Length: 511
Image 1 (cartoon, one colour):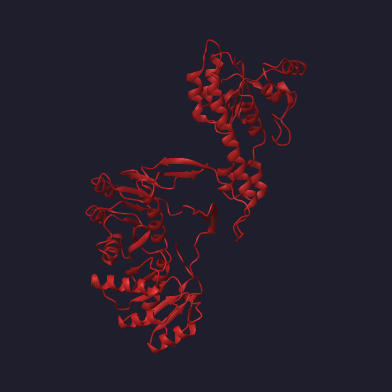
Image 2 (cartoon, one colour):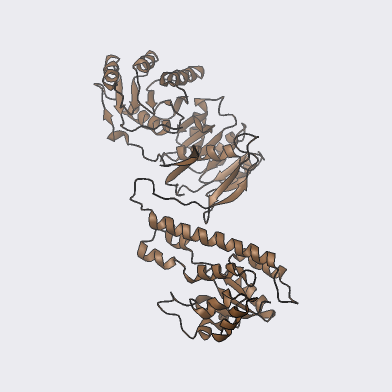
């Protein structure tokens, strides 16, 4: 039988309705601090915690409920006479319902990156303790830690017997242990990780909640789902279209990252996590048309990303072919109206300010691989020109563009570009020269102009044969990491061919 409830919440959502329900059912409400003040202001009668403990809150509110009379009332096993005698000796009473939610450590401290001396004030002590105590004693006590459970509690409450069934109490209790374990995990991660730390952390705890079941994984015979870390929300808004697939999630990330490498208006088109088109332009329509020209066959069924708002003129073009997804920072109302004619087309917007995860995690060989995201890209002016001939201004812009794109192409990767767009891409080949030949073949197939074209390679050239193929096709400027034992030979060959070559001293393998 529920005679007495303790309510102490940070998030006041729904608590007033719950308190009114408890009062109507003659259940005494014990409360303290801001919750007590809020309830009294709304004409809810409460018993202050201090009237039970005989002590006022101390240490700026750090100690309010941490008292044997409170915890004894929660933890006492009603079927154990010794427990009940101890409670009587303390002049304490049972507490049958505990309604508590916690200080928002993630939202107020971690996400705002507060300094440690400020962050610790959002570490809840009494709240988790009361929740765990009530959950341990779920046979006797009901616990509510989630505001969304208030309505379920009220609908399941047996008014005649002042009772909530045991199975409901068990379910409510299980949610507490999920909540408190995640809460401690977030605090642990905050304490153990430093923004200045370069190496992966010694320990990393993840608590994942299923956000969405997917139709299947990468292939129809594989099950799949999308998860989010607890207390994190999805970063994008989906305006229309079918549910996202496993492959859509991967492609959208690549498309979004590529377009947002650039400050000027840009468009990226992705197929199977590889770019098949990229361009900049004076507006989205120009950038999209240029990106399509890179491979007007492969963009069919692709993922298209922009780094600026999508307006009606480009939406008219986007609505013509079959595309899987379009993502941009925002869409005009007219653009959304035009795209709504394509019912299955997934249209998403995402803020450019969204923080990226610092580390990437993959499973391998019964364990997990963790690495920093490949977010560092050397500026073209900081690279080394290693040949006698230097790139001209247009070639430098093209080299910069190609170098930014090539790290998003599966290795071995070659990107041929001019100062405004990608012209050809060779991806995922076992030899670098094959990737180069594929990129050149694509350019010729689609009759693109190689004037001022340059080559970007994600890793060093092991042999000079690729340079000879480049020269045969009138490409005379290259950007690559360097680092081969044959660098000297490669540089000599570039000089013989009157090429300019830039070394970045950073490799960008992508598997």
